[in-house]
Amino acid sequence: MKRIAVLVSGGGTNLQALIDAEHNGLFGENGKITLVIASKPGVYALERAANNDIPSMVIPRKEYPDAASYTKAVTDALLKEKADIVVYAGFMTILDRQITEAFPYKMINVHPALIPSFCGKGYYGLHVHEEALKRGVKLSGATVHFVTEECDGGPIILQKAVEVKNGDTPETLQKRIMEQAEWKILPEAVRLLCEDKVTVKDGIATVKDE
Image (tube, rainbow, N blue to C red; front, top):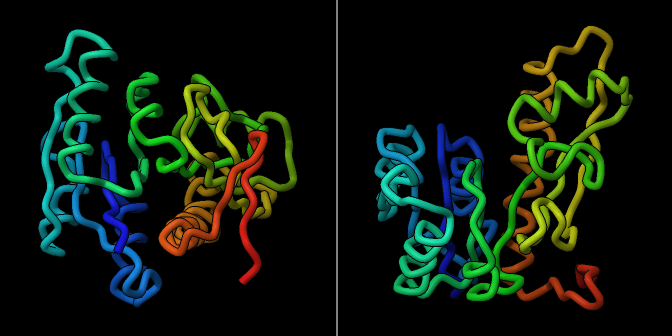
């Protein structure tokens, strides 16, 4: 069984999607959420963990002077947990290479756009959807990718397109992408990793046929 650790910074809607998937048997006997780590106290994601009897801890970003010391604290906690899969679920802190070296191709993130569009430094939260609407794209969506040193630059595991509608605001587009894409492909990507169905070669992730 793969031990799944989830990193959060806010309300935890993506965490809830993972919890629901586990309860619905998506991971079967292959995976279990064993730890939630929050980058700040008091976020609702911690309540979601508590409501589902999932151990959690807070490693406050503001208590660490730089990215290196904070990354070490998070990495050490994950190593102690013996995490097999690490999921960024609305985790708003960029960590350095210490963690990617400790968990190569074991960490995934969901990004609210179709990478390589609207990604990289500065593209997070509503900013992603604001830029998509400014460009007048007709399709946006979400991408689950491996976390590497390059922000939003890791191998792509899954993508799902979502229609952009006339009159959309960043908020309405964000909600539609969450409901139609993020909450579907993030649990599916975790299932694939739990079943060892994702391989990476030459920077390209391949999903094995079912």
